[in-house]
Image 1 (cartoon, each protein chain N blue to C red):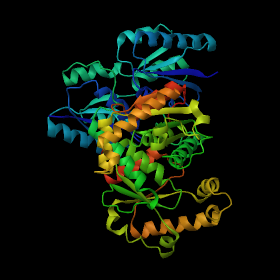
Image 2: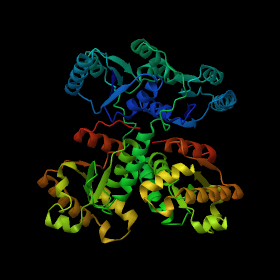
Image 3: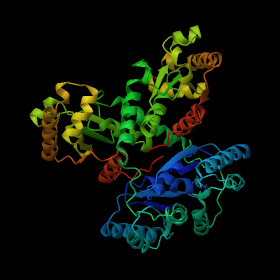
Image 4: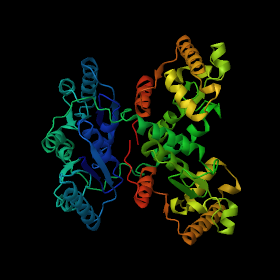
Length: 271
Length: 271
């Protein structure tokens, strides 16, 4: 039997879900059935939520877990009538911070995932447009790039660039190494002025062949031999030119982005 | 003087940063200078982090705040020697959950932002490719779409689709309403079979004109009159055809996505 977990919030629920997932990941043997209850911001919605949680309790016979980021104490009390185990995400930290900062919390609805800082928000959107227009060698004017990912086709460059742009406002371009680049074992001329902003992504050949097979089944592009050759040449090129690189086979875009920022000393915080 | 906050983690630091930002948002009057210390996963790195925090303390004269998600107690103790206010994100919740679930935490490094569930991870990447290939009316075969955003050019469709794909594996397409659609006040034929998957994005005309002016300065496309006309027609079309819609002017992509999922009853949890 799975244990039901509700992420409840007066806003998007992203904070509740993020910390909830991290805490639950500490209990590897337990299966969780996760649900979101965002925008629970008035007594009526809180009562509906409480009823839903109570129903689940009755159906499963197992006490549900509620990960809660609602700021309003009265709403929390309503949800608590469901009988669930209430884990209040903010409560343990507010007291120590109030003491340290010598100021009271504002008690406002959590807007940390809202458009709090307009300039920062606009930077994210502009960076996303930048990533889209500088994806896959479309626009190769890299003057404004914070960094440029290089690698063979389908090594993970595009999703990583989009993630870095969407969440950090980092202008990330990407350049796919061509057969010509790989044969010559030379950086293309247009990348040379930006050598200190280059970062390479690699991937295991077997995995790359699987991904390419899904994309263009039966093509030469998807053969293991072609993937092996491209990756060997790409890795050789990165070594020879001193481009730092990462094998993405078992690494998520979040981890890739964190490692790249760490390498380049980019300390920009996420939005 | 700004108060310095360090987000420290044995992994990406995303959880520490997410909850940290949410907690700090509760103290609206205080300015924070935020730094990330990801991949702090051995005693040497913990000592370097402690020294850095200690240095900041000496420089600013204000006790730094550390938001910590490291699982290893020994590493936490090393960082605590810096004298900072330590806020341990997991500690308050592990005890109650251990009691409730009748099992001990595994104590593993937090991999909730890693490639934990390969199938889910692949779904995100595939959905991202889907969003890219079904962006802006490029590929208009919507059979596989979970939902389709409609709206005038630059109303926020593309970043929202990318966000929903990257984080939720939701296959979101988007279709820009053309002048022809807006003149006829009719849904284009290719959208009609998918009416129950359509969601409209609108925006204030003045804001739209600003965004378009950045993109194509001096064009008719960017004039306030053109923006007003397009938005009025688009809103009329959405009302007439019963498409739910949202004005995105003051709403972030995270909020837009949460509201759309809420409306469609999509409970998929984020990755």
